[in-house]
Image 1 (cartoon, rainbow, N blue to C red):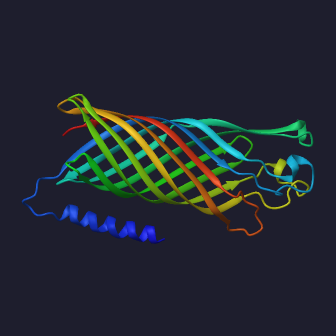
Image 2: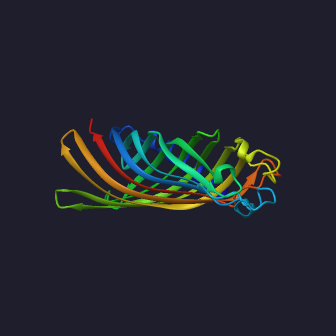
Length: 282
């Protein structure tokens, strides 16, 4: 909470300073961009101990659930610049991808249960930063929100939303007159909300369930992200960048609205993405 209040206060003050600089200062510029990313995405819920009735099905534990796919993500954004300050806006949305969940046990009908999930991912962020060290480095703070959702062909639905503040820095090295190599690191404090509808009859029978399997839970994560990128001009009105980013967040302190629900101890998200961006110099 202290981190969030600190970030909100400083973000608001910085935005006010950006848009109220004296008239003698340089004019504001804007650089729009478009991007495509290929992101290895892994969302997992740890096992739910003793969530199944006293039987021998999976030792009474509802197993770990994973959604492990490679998303193709399209993005649009833009950056406002003025006197060493910048304000960046970004929105990204993926195409649908599929993954399967399988539980094998001789007590299940047919010896196993399998469900194919189809889902997507979307993210948005707003970032305010300042260039320092002769414009080679930058410090920034911002707010982001993301949503992963998937629906199964056996009637299950999953939706995981996250939102929160982040703070970070970057540093760049010009490589002769060829381009610029940059590194980036950021720290995020995120709240996560998981909603899961487990309505399939295979897991809805009183003979199978020890507790409700539907989830409506909150959680919290603090984590780091890292990135490296290469950028260069194509011509006077167009430039590009290629970057690799890694993010890992473990959401803990899981609390469900229904006290009878046996939830996972944690939810975890891992991203590893490669992004190609085009910048349009106006």
